[in-house]
Image (cartoon, rainbow, N blue to C red; front, side, top):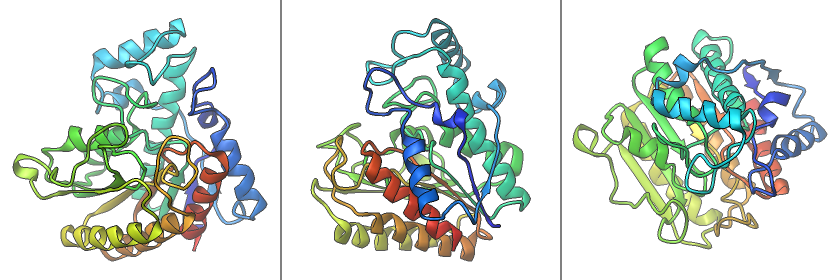
Length: 312
């Protein structure tokens, strides 16, 4: 089987208490829907372990990692300015999200899996020295650094269709000419984190290696498909060696935190086309991460569409 799926009780614990929008119900909602559709029959359920501190510090500063460890021990307070609360064990839970990403990379690079999907992952707002936007550790950032440090993969494509701009990936790699970024999101003038304008295309030696495609509130599948055509032409120019997709479901209609109106057809199209690009340029190597999504029915539909296409 070519697709490996990361779902587990440990990953399902990534969420915040007290009615927080990012709850611990998200993995369960997806997995129940996936099994009801028979999507559990053609995947390998992949075990994983928490990432060691040294791996997390490939992206995050030691000072920030220590602060999360202490907040995890105390189990109270905030890791940022009010979006990302600490809770008992938050360090260990967040380290498990990172660990699953690293195990997926190991399997894909080793040829044990062609593709993998981690619904609880894609925490794209955390910066090297801080949490942000419900994201304790930036598993994508750690993954990129590890692909280079351990696996010798240099030219990587990061594609983000979450409704929020992936600022923690974009700005921390803004000067990196070997990370190709495509980010389709709601215009930052109307939505957190307020970034990702179309004129932001990378900096220094990386100028022209990043593509931000902001969409107006209310944009639907038709606007997504038009943006995707531009994105696909852009990606093909660079012939990436490895593809990472953050496929947040908060871009769907009826998500409570945003204003786009996609259906799961957008996610299905993105995965299908990205699979083809990966097969053409990267030996099929593709990792997908669930990202955001705060309507449980919506995220279940979107992530089932992702898994269905990955299995084909």
